[in-house]
Image 1 (cartoon, rainbow, N blue to C red):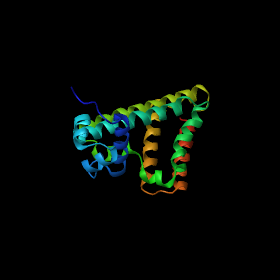
Image 2 (cartoon, rainbow, N blue to C red):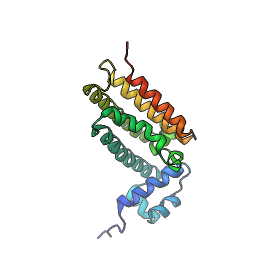
Image 3 (cartoon, rainbow, N blue to C red):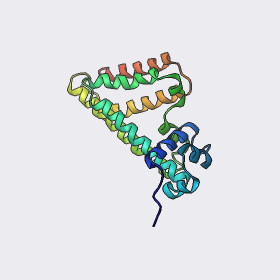
Image 4 (cartoon, one colour):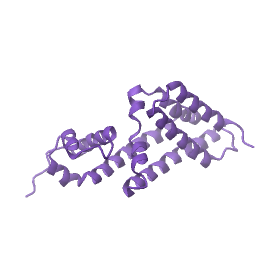
Length: 196
């Protein structure tokens, strides 16, 4: 009879997310993982497979949790345009340590997309979800007359996602809150400007 696992799988996976987020895939050792997760090496292999499989699962978990929160923020707001503004300006309002830490998904994408098929897939699926959330918010803002009907909602969704990713990368690279606010406000002004 197999012995039941003596640890909380979800809690252990959440700890793995934190380690990979802080150190990146290459710099994270198996010892770092088992120490943070509070499990033995064999338990890690038996439950999650090798380091790469654990990384992919950790990244998938992060992506699903963050995109759900992100989507709800944009979807549930009374003013869709204010919600878009809040997401973009929110980067400048983060604590300095959070700005410096950056986004686990963006860091993993920059490091591994194009070389790692799992990361490439997870990154693409995540980008598609975020882009769709922005596009839906733009359409909702148009429905409430907060944005011109002429704005191409699909192109706007893509633009907003690229702006958001750029803000997160700039924040991690040390851009000041003032600089981040300037970028966000310029993007918002362009979004609301009438198109020809």
